[in-house]
Image 1 (tube, rainbow, N blue to C red):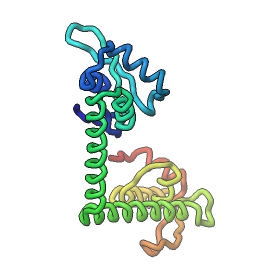
Image 2 (tube, rainbow, N blue to C red):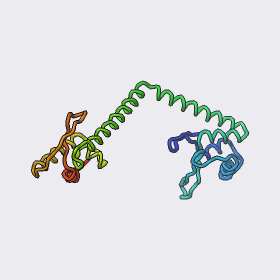
Image 3 (cartoon, helix red, strand yellow):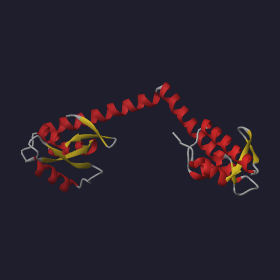
Image 4 (cartoon, one colour):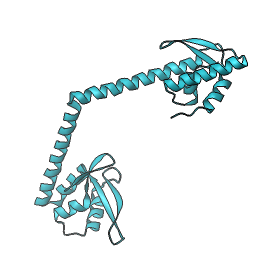
Length: 207
């Protein structure tokens, strides 16, 4: 019996299991009776879906969790049921061993730690940028990154530098004062009027 993935979980076709168990009941009646009798829950123990066949008609198929398939095998009460149940137990053991090997792999552990560190750095940068947006004596002034955080826009350093140059040029041309605040990464960063940043951001293409 083929073990597949259904919504991230191991699953087996109820129709395949029915055939393997050599049940004398019609499949449709067999699966409906089993679900009702043993209280299996849809989207927890099994999932129901339509399958288009070559003639253009439809079959209702059932994807069973391994636990559900084990229980159905056990209650069938024949040798095929015992064989099927043992097969599913072996599948679970193999799957568990593969997961253990995966998580114990030093290279995978290293990569997972790197991803976690990157996420922590990104979270810290977001906090710093938000602090930039708030730490100023001028409530309508923002740094480029602080303004981006407030507006929910992702801005890389290269584009941020370009926006800063444009904002500085507009402020100088129109006589708008700028401000500065301390920054733990860059020493100090410039702040610009929100009206100027509104204009520059609206004209900037973010990729």
